[in-house]
Length: 604
Image (cartoon, rainbow, N blue to C red):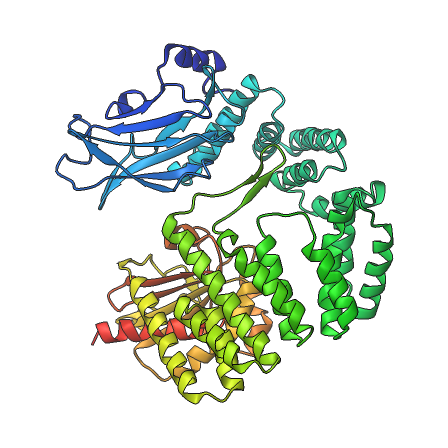
């Protein structure tokens, strides 16, 4: 492959301290020049620089990370004025590698160029740390979208990574995947494929029973498009290394697929005969399965035995959540209220440790906790406390401790009126016949949802809908959509959450099908689907809302979604007023109804 930027030139630029985009970064300075892990990095912006986009008169500037593995640093950092300049600082953790950012003030955005962002590379001496150039390649998608030369530039960076760090497994696989895609013929493509398979096989054989290494192996197969090998390689581990943690966990996964409950219990109990004090943590998943199965059968002794096994597992970031789940299952099945109360109180004592944000795990670093603001941490803690207090109220009710139960539930609602807490409170007030409290809860739920919906109101031009066709393959007539409020829901036949959402869409459609101002468009997004897939969808027999098919492969980028279902409300002027990404559970029906009502009222 022809390199577009040689290692020799890169090294010379690094040695002299000159970055390829140095001129464009004159208005932005990053210190130190070669930041290393553990360093405090300071970013300074000079609005008086001739090239500055953000003027000196603004009241605030925010540094926004567009790509970052600085997981413990906030995605958005406020800058502070020092004289006529603006500055902010953050410290690089022991895993920090690479990040890109731009500066924002209101509608103004300062970038070094239209298709690039500012960068913080982490160094060891004057050389980028391992994965630095690999992550730089990944960052290009956030900076340049789907530009024509993107793949070639990324491949060049993979090669530069290998020049600096020849053993970088991921860079090897990525480069070979690029070569496969751009091979001149089938023979060359197969040659690169075999090379990639060899690299992945070597990685597997380096530590075949290590769970972290196995994750990298499966990632390699996914990169080169060999998805079917992901499950097969785990089956190989289970057969060749049945006593390893990865082998035991794969066996648990296999058993979970068994549909017959009695057979599943038998297989789990049989597998647990090989549990020892040394491998006990690997069997936690099996104990969790048996806990749920025996609880459903109301077998108290065996349920509690496996609950103890689950509760005694090695502490991890989800320990408090696990304790809460144990208590919830026991209460749901009306089993062992004293034990349920014990687990709930233990979880309540750890409410400030409930996960907030994405917690990552890498064998080299252990658990990496994300940046969490004080307000978010307090909100997560309050929610956990509200959930657990309302759960304790239900447990107390089970034992006819009505006074204590009422206090617990009332305190929970006052502390955190979130969906789970309000659900528990509704159960409690229903079972105790407290109609006044039930009415109050319903009003509170509606007010909370309305406040939430109002905060989500936006206004941006909607992309063209010309790529939508009906189930006969005919384009949608613009006249049908003119001056209408349009609800668009993007889905796919293979999307489980989309299927969960469909009954709520049908419920909403039935309420609006006779409203001439509102048009529903339930649109197959086309991702791994064809028009024939959309036409053959079994949902046509269950639902009456109109279904369409999208022919534009870039529709997600244009609407700004990469997860489905994705639902949008467009006003009669052609502006997106609400954007809903992902399935939010039963709340979605009431939420979409409120969104439609707000848009309707605004157009009267």
